[in-house]
Image (cartoon, rainbow, N blue to C red; front, side, top):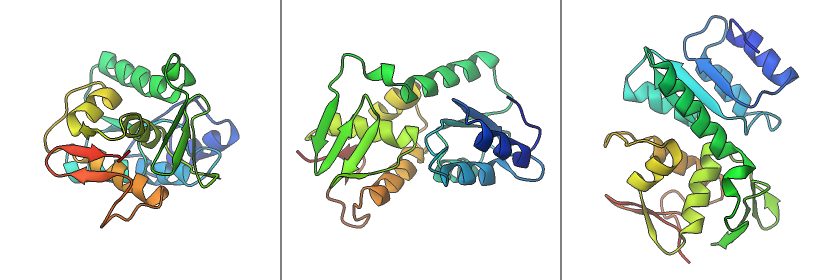
Length: 202
């Protein structure tokens, strides 16, 4: 499906939720950031993978997109092959098949994750996560007791080397901590290892 502005796009998404949303930041009637915020605020559409297309290259605006819950972004102009690769990577992460042959249930620090159902529960309460948040948490939980570097997270989740100034992982971690009830000032479930990455204790 295709829409020519944000309002029409939101209506189509709510009527017939797609497998993936590719959205320009600059759109009439409702911009991409507002659209993403509304999609992420609805439990029926919250987990749909979301990729931004943007001509804006400033880090602040890129981070704003991630704060709204975007899974990835690509700056214009871009090579269609790069966009296709990003689409495949995001869809691969969102599909159950990525966990075939891997441990289905992961438990650590009071968090229970079922990878085949892509469910996360704390005290039997379901925690709603975006695709990117789920995959970050899966990576951290599956390596509980070991430090996971930002390099590893970016390579596994976005399939590419990352800019040392790219703070998108930190934004997702911040969202994750809020959703799993971790204290951002003194986290006990997802600890920050300064200058290296993150650690989920055993």
